[in-house]
Image 1 (tube, rainbow, N blue to C red):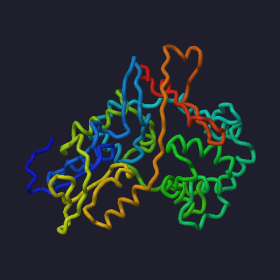
Image 2 (image 1 turned 90 degrees about the vertical axis):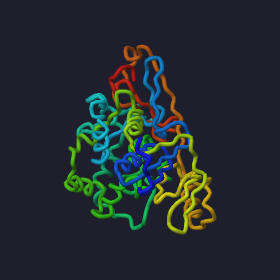
Image 3 (image 1 turned 180 degrees about the vertical axis):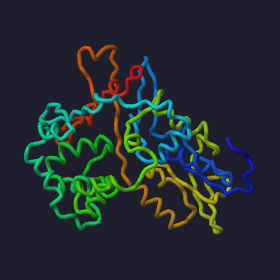
Image 4 (image 1 turned 60 degrees about the vertical axis):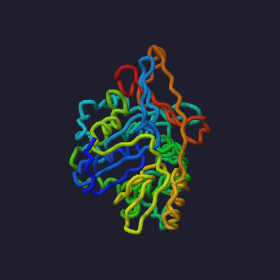
Length: 350
């Protein structure tokens, strides 16, 4: 991958071989004026994205699916020639999502008529949603998602709608997640328009996109699982990728260049490693850099365990259709949720 004539090139080091690191190295590697090295301390590339197959079943050990969301992500997928390998979430059935309420699964209906006839929220909670545009905006610099949502939509809607949806995505407590950064669109809508609902409706008319919004929202995987994305990034990257190379030292020289471990000086360094690992890196007595890495290492991560169940013929007895079932924190269950993978992606036995 790449040529070794790096003497006349600017040198860039990328620390971490997850999706962020691989994507950065892939894009930078296209520039013929750059020499790019990526360092990954383990033998695995792709970070938390990992797909395995057993007994005819395809298991995702990390994220279960993705969407492009931004034009730039779709650009990468097309640049990697992965469009033909996309697997789309099943149509009508996947819309169905169950949320536990009072110990029983209740369907979340997104159509106006279905939403107001649903037993998921009380009439009072539904009425509170209509009153959201009339509530004053927050004057604080940031709020937790729990505080922000309860203030805008009410406690019941937060507990039985926002909590299960957000916890299922982020895996963390809403009381510790920043609304400003985890929900930037909703936060900015309140700050600029005074209402989340009205502000988000107005936002749809702005920011013209390269690709249709429907395409960017589509939930997808790939024919051999999400591992296809990092594997293809590695295969087509012009960067030099080094596995089992842990960076233990990061030193800023007087000339502005960097020593990365025992390797040659670099003009720029990009770190995509988990922030908790930065505390272990030596900074060669650079106090400012040491303080920065120490501050970053205090960021918290959520740990999630995944249990897979595979059956030869479960659908004939239990009609598992739709996305799955989510458990609100208020229900005090031992799980965040469950996904019906086979009915989500009808390819083989997923």
